[in-house]
Image 1 (cartoon, rainbow, N blue to C red):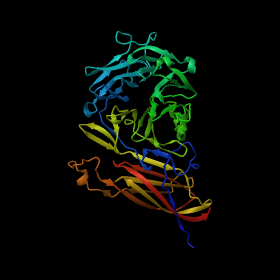
Image 2 (image 1 turned 180 degrees about the horizontal axis):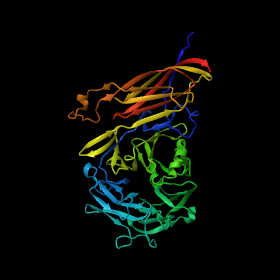
Image 3 (image 1 turned 30 degrees about the vertical axis):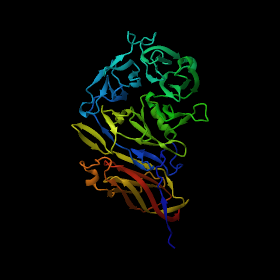
Image 4 (image 1 turned 90 degrees about the vertical axis):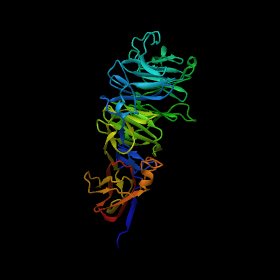
Length: 521
């Protein structure tokens, strides 16, 4: 009697994102061992990431920092490269770099902090800069001891590596000659500094890496410790709340405030602080435990790691410019072990991120190695050539599954058919390789060209002269079902899928495997 054909639904493939930490034979099908240029739809389906579309010509040097500042009237964007801080004119792509301030140093790892319509900028090796708008004109000045400004008395060169404007004052730390001293300004006078807290007796030997406001507290991150103070808004009553020992932050710009939490890069990966109604102290939670060994490697050279939090997308993104590696942590949905879904984004060298920023006026901005600024949109990595001309470049999205047990023990299964359903991706080519029984060589392969039906009438919804415009009411691409006939037998399967972006949103909706029971082997 003929064996009955079985159907194995693989709808949850990749749902948990990347895990390179555990053995591929120990994980369920929700995990991926490779997830390059992958993101997730709102429904949790694996999809292409968006592209990087440049909105400037090249400055000539990599972009070290991007920051949005409100000067009391309008939002402006600062972007730094080499020895210049630009007031970037992002409304004119061909003349973004026309207005700038020349600094005394040739590097651009600045941290900016807004305070009361003014702005402060710091980096190791440079005196603190102060930006103030008077009568509609803004200018940068160096904070040193003068009639208008006052650097801390007794500090010969005031070059803090980190700064925060909050609780009515500016706070700074990491000064080269006293890296474990926290300095703070006068009330509402971020240009006048003559107050400090010496942390030597608090955490022993360490140095200040970053300063953040959190849950009404002042959080001071060292490389090896974290210190929290209560009542920072009332300096006469400021009091030590907690010292978290043995865990610190190795990268100032990895820190992001996410709701009632803070994410930061430690020596062992991205961690978070959080407080709940039932906890008096601040526990630490590992967010990248599924890629821990990789993160340890990158964190060791990651003192210039950059990060951003995209609230509308639910992503914490961290990039390591020196090694050109970027991870996206999708925190909208947690996995069964309480971690974000993680994917890895890959860029060519010239397009690699060297700084990240989120602005109210422009959204997510990426400073690139090529000295350009890009936005996160579309499904091409688009290079700006000038005069509103773009060169659209496809990128490869790739994923690998874990080894999937067909569930018949010593009995091999006879493979019959693989059915894939994808959404969107018009004219996108998807290739698939199938590996069997732990072989490193694929036994089966195939490719599909996606050609989904298009719902809607372009002449009504998509025409440039239509009432509704071209962006929101464009036609909607439907679904494509593709079938791959299979042969061979297997007890375990692993799938590799690759797709080349073609400017269209593409997501994998489902995979279904048809097979029947074979012989014992």
